[in-house]
Image (cartoon, rainbow, N blue to C red):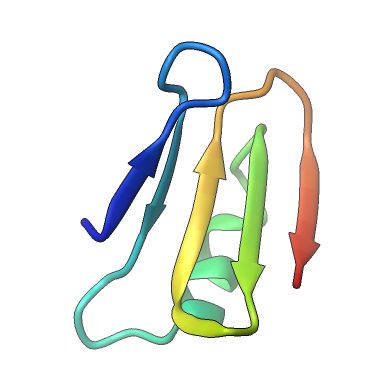
Length: 60
């Protein structure tokens, strides 16, 4: 785990998986993750997950 951040009650995480790119992780999680899922262009290994209660996707 690289870092964790809380939106309201620590329900978000920025993370990476050894041996996988951020794009690979994003594509694996996208079909079934029901909360927020994001990618950071400036940190290509990281993905962001959050439990916001609705589906949201982004890259920046």
